[in-house]
Image 1 (cartoon, one colour):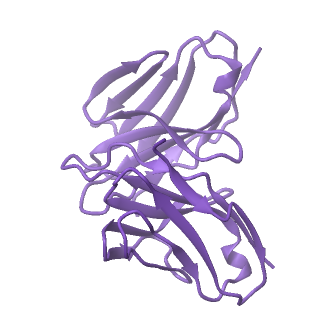
Image 2 (cartoon, rainbow over the protein chains, first blue to last red):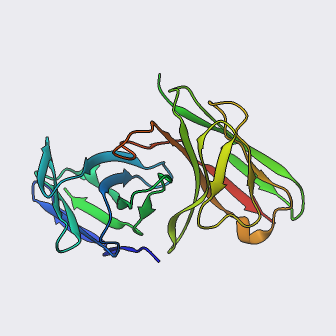
Length: 112
Length: 115
């Protein structure tokens, strides 16, 4: 059973701080990694995806991937109250099914 | 506007009464999928479709049916709903790419309650 693990949180950070969200996955053959943000009662929306080892930056967001450690993280710089949401890590293991295996999500709260 | 639409958004029904949740996308995506989201269990895939007339089971297909007669539509059918199918349902779609899924676009969700 392929698993994706995240700390459920809640993770609480002050406004302007860096929020660090972590995710580990069990399938060493996993190929693509995604971070989705989900506000309460809303649908997931993609923030970042990453395929290769290393860092990928997009504005205030940085995704980091370490395939050897089977670890992917999301850093949010200059956190804002509007960043308060549940962050879902999702992994694609390859093959013909584009199914994403999701972690249960980490609830982030950014305090003004 | 590029989007995935689902209807209805909210539904309360009774055990055994057949229902259909529609899903439609206007992005010409080949791949479509249904997920359910439950507290403590996260998002789990029910069924997926790689193209018209091509569908297959995900992780939790029991009690559900799907069809893909047109590229844009992927309805989810509950022939005889039961209370354990009370959940938040999401339809998603994406392009097919040799690298795998790039972005999966999610619909707004359908909150289903089966009494």
